[in-house]
Length: 465
Image: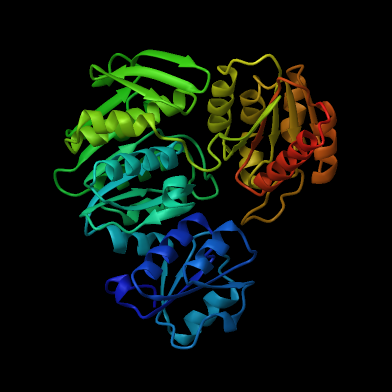
């Protein structure tokens, strides 16, 4: 039975399959905070699962029929789950109510004044910015975001006492079609998730469907620099566009960078940020216009954005002593390029060294040439083995596809499958003044942590780079 039927917090016992995922963990945390008995399963322990355990969620490692507790009234599962999953099959056999994470999210937030942030790139940071501004303005929103936030003590969700909800609207598996927003933000539309969508036209059509699901009199705030966004919103009357192009309703001007800081003007108002890159200027512009639509104080908006420190793994500075080490979630060519463009703007005397772990065989197959081009600003490229996530291996598809294209550009790169060997080689090659960026949506963050530990150990023993 694939329907919930009433408010999720009315269930006494809920089990989540894939509870360690950032989106699923937010639902688990919300339900636990509402007094529901929550359990969940995942294939491995993580910072996220340990956090959930501290909040009272029973987390079980591995997937098995017996993981579903006796008396469980509802099972929520992630879209990335294999249909042959033992717990999923058991729940169906038992007649337990089942819903996907997207439906659970819609069930929670659609009844509130909903701000939904969509887009192929930038939606996590934009959602986080909006959430912070609303919190600082004492709106006390309910929030669901696809990243860990320091101002949520490392969590990805918040139960608010106000009547406003802010959510990241994910297009994967058409999840955003479960939402009905009052303010709908579109940061950009790019080709991605081609294991779900037929082509770019299919992606744009689904964004149109999402827009059509907005509530009556809803406002659409969209980046007018993106031609595909303009196609999607062409027939929408109540819309506001922003971007660098002067033809937008709100044009960004006077942009300047100073290290990791940036300043710009929009709507006659100067905005200052502590996060780097033109992409974050665009993200904050969407936040600014959302807050403006809510008639929040300009002083509150400016002060909140000025104090925004970023999202975990979104160009997160992890080490600064002789060299800079960043951990970055970028896993699409456009995201890679945006991050490396931001790194190029930093004042430094050394090289940019990128350690990239491709995410998904299909994405590598579809975009390996675009990835190679995105790494053009990198002086040395390290490629790790593909992180398969939900996919099975595709014959002939490996990180070497990207590397071979990179070589054609006359660039310097290396593919190393074993992480320890990669770290040894990287440590030997880095020198003072370098910027090292670890990129990818898989477990490359753990490799970054190990490299930071090595650098800290060197620092402690006073061994120069």
